[in-house]
Length: 502
Image (spheres, rainbow, N blue to C red):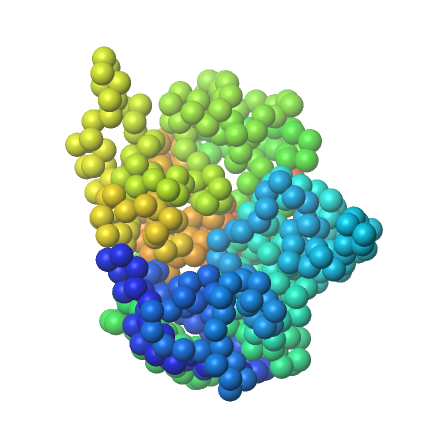
């Protein structure tokens, strides 16, 4: 249905794609994998007209295809779910879902709002999104926005569906619903291109897989019977080494953070918890369960109506994220790097150094110590293997995975005693994920940092957390304690979580 021939694309200092040729068939789910910066997102953007190739051509149903823009792409029946959240923040959920179809609801210059809402509800139902279509999308979590993006593309009834990390903020339950939809589309003859760093998903849903490495097409294989180790080797060019973290050492005598009866309408319902030095505490739940809402209350991004937060035994008064960082040494890696985590048009150096400016600013000159900022930024680039052309490269020119590393790196540079990390490995490849996991583990186990890990990736949260709190309806409904001490299996933990989510 869709054929790419010798596609190449260069950006300043980077050859993003180099002579890539691929074919996508109707009724097939074709996985596309590769490390961060391998060229996956660039390829999808060329297909949809966001970028124009420097060389090569595309064929659609055997005829030459030249897509000039996103509207052109939709008119030809090609839909894209972006890796990065792309919504109109001031508009409603319904308007965002029907954004490219609004002219079809217009009559004598006025929108037929009841009909538009009905169509939006139908699209929302397909992805299990049960909210008011008239809600402002700016008030939603990143995971909810991701579901809105998926609903928007599904409502277009595309013949070719391009999915760039569509489950990055979704739990296994929500991802399973999406996969059911994809199988129905597959049976209807839709060609589906599925980009993911989650190998479990690739093997679960994919028929074929193509690997990109450093902008080049390494190969295409049938997934049935393909060993994972071989697929990883195709991606990184060598055999991957697996690391065992061992047993954590949590100091139960040092309660670093205590939350008592935190309540905020629509955000938290009488939430209480404790966090200890050297502990990684996992928060798990479905989209909208209240995990991110709690994190924002803790760091002062939102305010609670009642309840108390104690840090090192003293009642904390946190009115802003700045208070959280500078008064209480508590940092927050947001799930929404584009809108909240990064200064996209600023340099990598600026983004990595911003959390330490208070420490390195001249007392009298009020000028930033450039040398100290450079050293801190270089240390994070090395620690996280951030792929960048240099310290002055704008962050919006990095791949999504490398942007995520910068978002995490700025808080690691701050050296917080308490670190709340919300979906820390969204959109990062298998090697980067292992690096981030090792960094978080070392922060807790070797430096005694206290970490709250919010993740929709069940293997991630089970592998790292010593305790897991299960959230539902903005409250904690279950605790799985002493995971490593009890030697609980992945299947047993997954079963216990599932019992309290249903």
